[in-house]
Amino acid sequence: MLERIHIFHTNDLHSHFEYWLRMQAFIKEQRQLLASRGEASFLLDVGDHIDRSNIFTEATLGKGNVEMLNTAAYDAVTIGNNEGITLAFDDLTALYEGAAFDVVVANIKALTGKNPDWLKPYTILTTMHGTKIGVIGATAQYDVFYRTLNWEVTEPRKALVLLVQKLRQEVDMIVCLSHLGISDDELLANECPDIDVIFGAHTHHTLPEGKFVNGVLLTGGGKFGQFTGHLTIFYDHAEKRVTALEEELIENGQLAMVSGEAEFLFGLSKTGSALMSEPVIQLPKTYYKEWFHYSPLSNLFAEAVFDYTGADCLMFNAGIFVEDLKKGNVSPYEMHKILPHPINLCLVELTGAELKEIYVQAQNEEWWHLQLKGLGFRGVVLGKLLLYNLKMDRQRQLFLNGKIVDPAQSYTLATLDLFTFGYFFPSFKYAKKHYYLPAFLRDILLSYLQKSGN
View 1 (cartoon, rainbow, N blue to C red):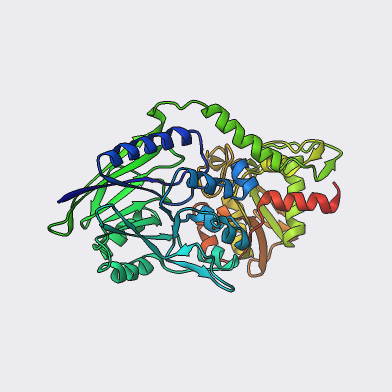
View 2: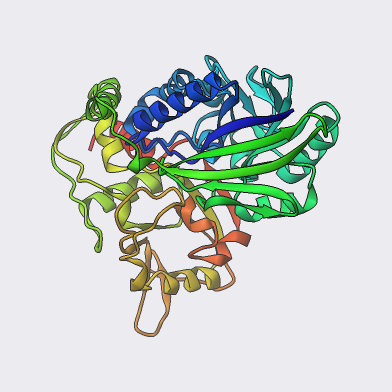
């Protein structure tokens, strides 16, 4: 008998719910149709379903997303970095407590204390004809971040290969939920051809018909709910093997609109804002933002960062401030609108010579207008790179608080974690760093305002 098995898959939604109702209506309709034909179907998500820049996700700490996944009847998911490292340990532990689906992540465990009950290295899905599908999963190895949050994250491909060796004789096929990125997916396929399909995510790549690497099918469904993936597996029971794999991407924006979409989105926003609208402080004046200059708001934020970190100097981009901080009552909701980013502070140790190099690099005005996507940034443009306590004279002498910087002396620079990933300042990757987690920028500014009474 030749059995057709269907797997619908999503990835990197990042709490973009614009097409959620129509995509889930489409999937539900297709699954009902397939069931009437006697063909099995499953629904999987490959991580980063949540994004705390969304007010509904922020207000519910992702539990609202899990309710959506439950309602949509997902069978299994893995976590992305947005689930893994933007939530405090207790919040991630609690995130999937009410999940009606399996959460498979082979490469994380609690450093201290008990693993959450939902954490599994794999699950097995079974069709009505008894065909067993082993589902494994892993997430990107952000070791420093996970360790700071009381998680141990191990090398994902090694963990997955070991799982495949264990499962190969127990199941008829193996699929992998990989929140690792396309490069790691290709490496994994070459290392472990016993995997039948690697569902890809993290790098937001798009593979409209999939891509075969070493006989393994790789998929990629873009980002933000742009696409729904549909994989058809042909399994020959006589030969006991997968004989063919067919992948397609459905463009969700082209699906038929569903009644109530606008009301649904408004309802999510209303729920989120209502949960976070209790005023926590009253300000006597407005702090205005500027994206290409220093501003009252950037100066206030600098005060907060100095107070929080005790750093010698600061560097952050003016574009982090999406709105002004207005006079009057301020609630967590208002603060979230100003600083929606899932970004953390980082303290970097640099020599005076390295600090001077960073100062010069930060003068690159081409960066200011960059419409940055990713790295945690959720603003419009990067904006001017603002430096505090640092000045350079016409003789290119660098001063810190009016004193000449010693090239051999060690200094501390507080900055945003997005600048430490190597894209802007490669030297940061190798410097000694301390990340402040789980507090986001909005948390630090609000706490400072409450403490100082500005």
